[in-house]
Image (cartoon, rainbow, N blue to C red; front, top):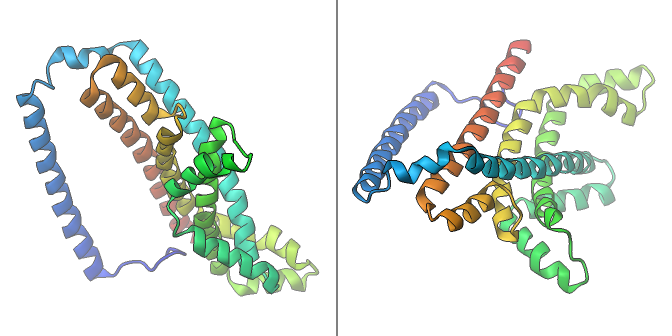
Length: 264
């Protein structure tokens, strides 16, 4: 059973399968219609795709993918660290720690990441805080995703049986030692698939670097399309790169979830 939601029952699984089949059929129909329109307008001509069979094009896009990965890794590391602190704060017995942590999580979770990007991009420089380009993307992503990671960690901690904490205290460990040595390792294993899934969403959010002109994958695609005039071809290739990367990470999340269930 997931620590974040209940497993669907037989009827829910049937509805999910039916909805999945209908969604796939709709996607296939839309794809066929798009291909037909592309062919009718000459967008499938060989000479319009041939540039993407050359290494310079791919090297430029892969450089953008590297910048995307760097921003995603740094933002994920900072988000997890801040999220863990917020989760522990929300579970604290001290009101002066618990209430601010809960307020941060509840408020930030409903604020769009794009709005936070605009705050860093336009509002902070007016007060003398003009961050480097890289951090104009990483900071709002960290602020936004920390709230989501906090709820993931909190759910994992609450899923650990209370007896584990009582056993740690019984052998002479302090509450902090019990949390660090007993509860957190178990909680981290249980929520690892959710952490990977949230990281996939964070990776997609790096496309907001387009707003701040950070040279991530989507922005690199924009520059490339402006240079070669192959707008549709460029964004199709960029979309396929995102699809491969995110599908691979989603597959990793499913594998980790299956392994965690097998160990349970």
